Length: 200
Image 1: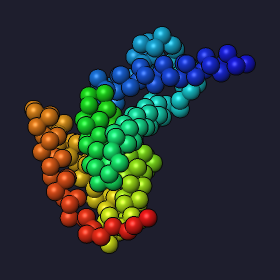
Image 2: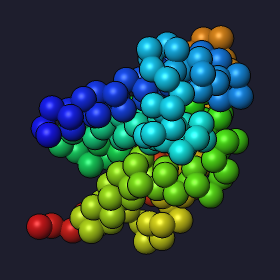
Image 3: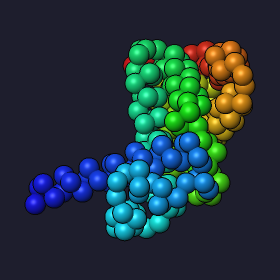
Image 4: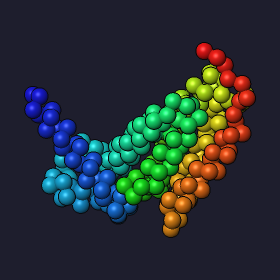
């Protein structure tokens, strides 16, 4: 029984990996379940057994991409003990990860187009935006922020990061564009700094 479960998990992971590769290289529209099945050395029936359809498979692939990006944000932010530095490191990690070839098309281009903005935004809220909101809430509790709505700031900053990632992805010099973006974000966030910090 345990072996059957392990084999099922392996099959599902294999399908997701192959599908992610296809969606990245060819885009959602030009990827077929037949191609994905052939590459994974499985039948289309096997894919339908685990996923409702191509859209359902894409949904799972996007979810895995967003979770990976969220993990990178947490890892990078944890490299500093300063809450402002944590915020900037997290923002940088998101943008840098989002524009990488294995993430960009699935996460920023096909994601909203295939699943719709509402679904895409809901998935984003469960991953990167959740971490951003949590960081801002902690900063608010410590008195690091001016009296603004954390929800409003979360959505404004998240929107800026997503748009920045799309812009950077189109630029010929990725590193230069990333640095320029982070300078703007850093200056923008400076305006939210509180002059007083609540002592623990």
